[in-house]
Length: 259
Image (cartoon, rainbow, N blue to C red; front, side):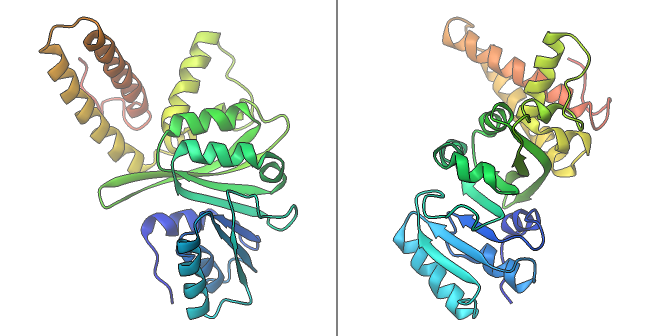
């Protein structure tokens, strides 16, 4: 039985049962092996842009006797995946910019599958905004902490009229003024609507960590002459702390001290 990290196990848990999986950037091939062992998927295509990781994935697939169920392909994003070959696409452990590039370069194919599981390592706000502005609907989100690092992830699918559905369960914007909508949109881009509304405990831990870090930065900046770049950076920190405060209010209105 294969053992995988908490991060990968959680991402694997977002893959729908019975889905044919395409694992983009498979690295060691652990997730498709794990899901096939669990009986969660019938088959998979494990893909990577680099030959070294793909060779390791082949070794692991052979070791666990999965050759009949898991193919390997050298591929830049989803370039080597045929239309209709997969129901679920997993893209985990990559920077947000690279995930967006994969979604853009393989747009037609990515929009055709029933789900995508995404785990960006960076630029999370940018990824959420891209999804929201390009018709992808967030179905659910998870977040784990492993080895001192926080890993948010999500399952999404494409809907032609899906723009803006990050904001509400029924895909409609709140009945309020434009400024409030924009503020709420930024909060969800930053922290994730499902994580906030479901009071995810790992997100709460992250928010406390973030607040502590940002307050430390603010204290340092206030001790300097606030002009030019210092003033701009202080403004960014103050804005982050304000967003952090709004997010903490989802968990407990008294979870933070008033300044």
